[in-house]
Amino acid sequence: MSKQNPKDRLYSRDHEWIKDNGKGKGTVIVGITDYAQEMLTDIVFVDLPEIGKKVVAHATVAVVESVKSVSDIYAPVSGEVIDVNTKLEETPELINQDAFGEGWIVKMRLADAGERTMLLSADDYDEMLKEEKS
Amino acid sequence: MKKTPLYEKHITLNAKIIDFGGWAMPVQYTNVIDEHRTTRGAAGLFDICHMGEIEVKGPRALDLLQLVLTRNLADQTIGQVKLSALLNKEGGIIDDLTVYKMDENSYMLVTNATPKDRDWQWIKSIQQDKHFDCTLEDISDRTGKLDLQGPFSEEILQQLTEANLKTLRFYHFCESPVAGFPAIISRSGYTGEDGFEIYAASNVIGEIWDKLMIAGAKSGLKPAGLGARDTLRLEAGMMLNGQDLNESISPLEVPYGWIVDAQKEFIGSDALKAKQNSGIKKKLVGLEMTGRGIARHGYKVFHGEKEIGIVTSGTFSPTLNKAIGLAFIDIAFSVPDTEIAVAIRDTMTAAKIVKLPFYKRSK
Image 1 (spheres, rainbow over the protein chains, first blue to last red):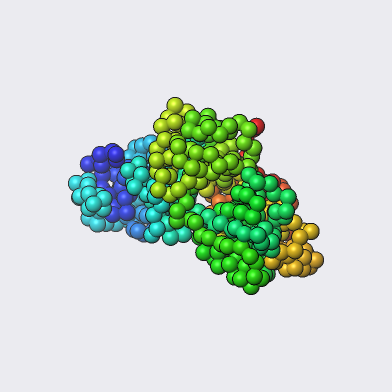
Image 2: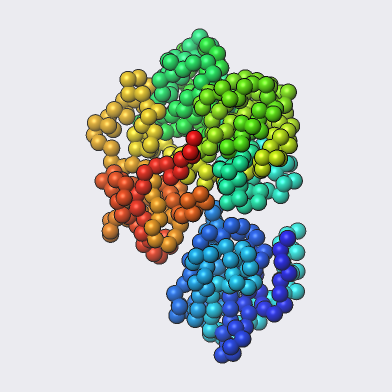
């Protein structure tokens, strides 16, 4: 069973989350949801972007590979990559173990804070998953 | 999609189902790495009912098989299994299949799932053309198949059969009941481990599955899906029809030279001789990623700036903990330790040619 979707962040329809970095200046942490890691199963490789890379919302920001599959991770919002989770290079399974915490993927500086309105609350994301599973 | 007799069990076990050549098959029950390691360390049970079985019987059965298959079957004994290739006239591989000699003038061919009908039509057309006195029957629908693979396979299966498995040699089979149902027990498989391929009527295969799961509970037996089957066979350096092999590739270009008997005439043998004489230009080789990334089917392979071929199979190896693959490349670069690169998305990623297999079990 998937873990609870924390209420301290926003969700995309592609199963990514963003959470305020806590350092102000419009920066966020980006990861995939526990439901997404469960669907991907055993993650064995993460292809991280270079710091400084600029991406628009819905463009590929990273690639996550399980034994069988290759999956693009889309940027939930537009912005610039300011940090990557280098721990994933050696321990990609952190995403399986703790998708909402230690398994974060990148940090981004938002290009347009208004894009947050495109995203879902935890409750709305829960609803979407219910529909997807039924 | 077609379903095997075990489909409902897979659903109950919460398997992830994929379309494999028109069959609804379990790709994994828990996750690929766990099922893979369970098979290497204990035992895994695989639903292989999708594969094809064709019976060839009659006074000229051997003559027909000698003509259509690359391997010399003249010295095959009853109870022996032989791997062989079925070629088109140009020497391309239609299928790689196993031949079971059931009796004098009686054989069972075990084919891959996807090319089964193509195999049947091709062999049938040659039988008719040459007026060989024998019959062909596609018994796939009424035949179920389970692969029990891994070091504990023998002790698990031995609980359900009176056949003495200790004396059953690799690539040999016996006909003996399993859990009380008539069955063929073959010591063979597609994982690089010790194990058995078990054939029985499709209407009892579910019961055999259940009895095996019970008999194997103490040994740690788990159901394993096509995902683990793929990583297991790739580590063992085995090829997958339709992915590493196809009708434009001959056995001389892949590690299958050994199943071609150069002394024998068969359909495709002239083409193979001509290829040999004009020089083999491409070869299927093993590769190992030395840079960060996983090679996948269809990625391009380079040597410096020069494109030299394509990855046919690629995965993360759960046993070796690194990315491995097979690639079909220009023969000039096929020597082990040659440094190559695989184009992974936008990045040229370092790799090298390695000898096959990637994994060999200790006996």
